[in-house]
Length: 460
Ligand code: HEM
Image: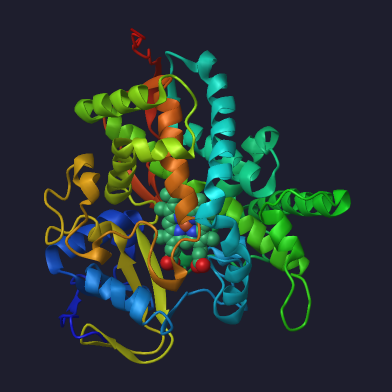
């Protein structure tokens, strides 16, 4: 443990019921509950969800210890032999796997996300963006759910960039299948009384049919690519060509399915919610919105943005970073202690479950001035929070987000692309966050699409 790590006192959250512990309050509103406990009781807490005891850590030193310095001692919570939660849907892909399987697959997948590939990716993102936004003409002047629109847009971006395929004609079915399967995954963790998946209840049947739909879509992609033998230099090519250094074996069909599904799911929902929150924050902060539009109009002069433009759009990038701070799409990361260990002076036994709250870190008054205010200018001129691990929208350490460069290009690029054509106005007063796999706007965010007129620049 580095010497700089301070010692913490573990506080037991009061009020747990004899059998269920804090399950009732937690299940009703997990995010508000964890945030409220942290504000009231401190940075290192312990609470109970039914038979499970959990730790809630909300300090940068604790996050750094768990995610970086002791990353080998704090593992993911999924067990491929007894799938629960996300692994029921994603199988043993990059998000849910551990150990040697994870290491090998991360080595295979990582190169597609290298910074050097982002210029070409950005052109593709912009192409997809322009196509979809062109279809918004018929929606002008009416309220739309911006979360829904961003989901459709980022789904098409991930399909086109990673798999060189369009999912546009399946979008409604995909969104339905993802909603059903992710709800099922969440319930499998939160509802200890649920019936096993082989019992033919209507929910189990609905889940199975959603999974069958997604599997047929994914296997269809793989079969078509193998059949055509075409090369696109995309993720699908990389996965199909990967060979084990020692045995020469390729990935199995199940491994291909799990990794494809994982990138498909992890690669769009997070960015979509980040963009939806960003539009909401801009719509409710007129000065920031005016400054954003001024920058976009001045830099783009009415044309489609590309990767080079991003360096000339610092305020747009700052808006996105600030939105990720206030509404981090992954508000919590979960780990399990693989062996007995000590973190910040606190002993944790093998099997101890830990939540690192990114949401709480991002609003911690010891590390941010005006933590609850939307202030994009705090990111200009390279300013950073007073502690490095107080800002972790993409996690940290070996399990940090593999798509960080992708998302850091996609977010500001799509903001600029849309902002040059549209001014999004709020059509709903109150929007509440809800923690459902990502930090989503509860019941969506209704907004009006108002065409944005670019001021004419005199050529004189
Ligand atoms: C704003 C957008 C995004 C946010 C906020 C985000 C956030 C995160 C976070 C916090 C983690 C770490 C989870 C943990 O430590 O348990 C993670 C992991 C991951 N993300 Fe992202 N992500 C975003 C976009 C993307 C994109 C665009 C992709 C793919 C194209 C992606 C793919 C993944 C994968 C595969 C992992 C697992 C990495 C591993 O364990 O090796 N993410 N993401």
